[in-house]
Image (cartoon, rainbow, N blue to C red; front, side):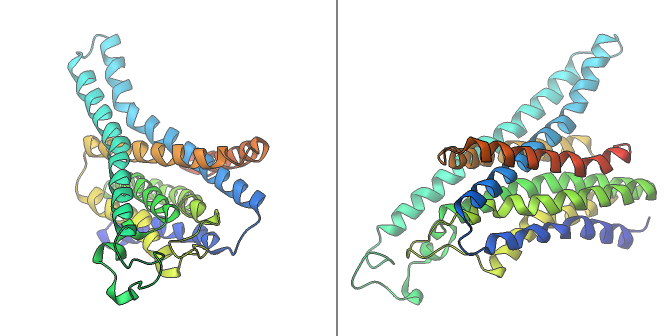
Length: 297
């Protein structure tokens, strides 16, 4: 398949992530609805962790099988295992460090004389410090949405690699099924990105933090754009090591945001709604994965 058609497939697979984003603009959803939506998003993300880790573990499993059959040595197992561990650690601990850095910057901004919400003499929007206009000035809900988008973007880059590689081998039927399956996946992932934004949190001025369409489109670009880029790379370059790196980076970052979202859901003390949402999210993830499995991947 030529590059132009392959890139079109990658675009279609990634663009469906916008379908779940409008949920983030709900005006003051009821508390039970907010909790159920957040728990459902966690279910989708938990499925993604399983999905990416199982794919990243396949080379290690194959190397262990070779050791068992006496057709290979232990060195490939150690190499793949190290790659798996490093990617997972960077994805998980890297976001911990990044989130702490953003929190420190936000505290410094709030302590700046004249910053919004500090009383008389506050600066106008145009006079605010440059840091106040950056990510550090965002509400915790928006920063968490960004982290989710980054994690999903890493995962989608690996998906794009699979699409590009199958198209480059002229396996058109496989590439088409991959696009359909990944497009369904991304439709549910978009909902996961905006789950923190449905919690009714307020910004620094005490107003309900309702994201703009520009913000939502930016999150779609961060999360869905890598599918297109991965398709481009995969069409001309094949590397199982690169795929494992991006899969484990995605797993680590998604694990971090799952822990954050579960902490928020746990404070609601409605385990019935939390478990219901988790179940719906998990089933949605496995249902959309069925088409990809049908393609033989």
